[in-house]
Length: 330
Image (cartoon, rainbow, N blue to C red):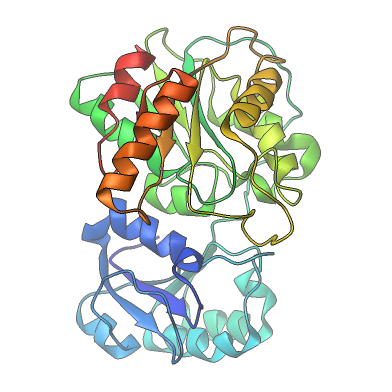
C-alpha cells in the first residue's frame, strides 16, 4: 500500500469503532495526512478534516477504511464514497471482514480506473495446522479481560522501548490494525479455525535465542464471541511470557451488556493454564491497565492496588510507560 493515507472514519458512533485509525495515527502519524468523516460521525482521530479532493492535494495516495464493528461489515451506502475515491485516483484499503471487491460497484470502479483494493484482514497465505512443537527464540503475548483493552498498544510500546535498549525484538501483528502498522502479519480472526494456531506459529517462527517476538493479542478467553480466536493464538504463540491487559471502567464485555467481566485473578489463572498446554514454562510478567477514562489520582491508586493484589509490575503504557514490564521480562 502506498502512503500517505487519508483515514476514512465513515459515520461510526463511538471512538472505539475508530481503533484502527487510532492505532495507525499513534504509530505511523507521518503516513497520515488527514481524516475524512461522513455526517453524523462521532469519532475523531485528531487529524485535519479533509474532503477526498483535499486529501489528494496533500499527497494522499490510499484511502484507509480505519474502523471496526461487530462482524466487520461495511454499510452499502459507503460504496458511493469509495467509488468516488477510486475515480479521483485513490487506492483503497480496508481492515473489515467485508471484502471491497465483493461490492460490484467498487470492483467495477477499481477496474475502470486502474486502482488497487487491499483487504488486509484476509490472509493470502496457506497455513498448516499447529504442531505445539517447541521452537527457539522467546515470545511474549498480551492477553486480556476483554476486547480493545491494550493488547496491541502494549506490545508496540514495549517494542519501541526494547529497540531503544538495543534488544533483539519484533512486533508480530495478528489483527488488521497491527498489519497496517507493521506492514506484515496475519489477521487471525479471518483464518479458518483449524489453522489459527498454525498461522501464529508461522508468523512467530524459530529465532535466535535472544530474540523476542512481541505478539499482539486478540479477544479474550472470557468473551463468548471471540474466545476461540484467543485460544488458537495462545496455543500458536507458545508464549514464554504473558501480559494481562485490562480496562477498569467497563461494567460488561464489549458489545455484550449481559456478560460480566472476569476478575483479574481468574483471568490470569485461565490464560496461564491454557498457555501451559503448549509451553509449560509460561508465566505472567506484568499487567497493563488502560486508565485513560480515569483521573490521575484514581488511576495511580488503581495501579497500586492491582500491583499489590497480583504481585506483578502494573503499568499504564501511556501514563507510566512500559519500562517496568521490560525489566521483569529480562
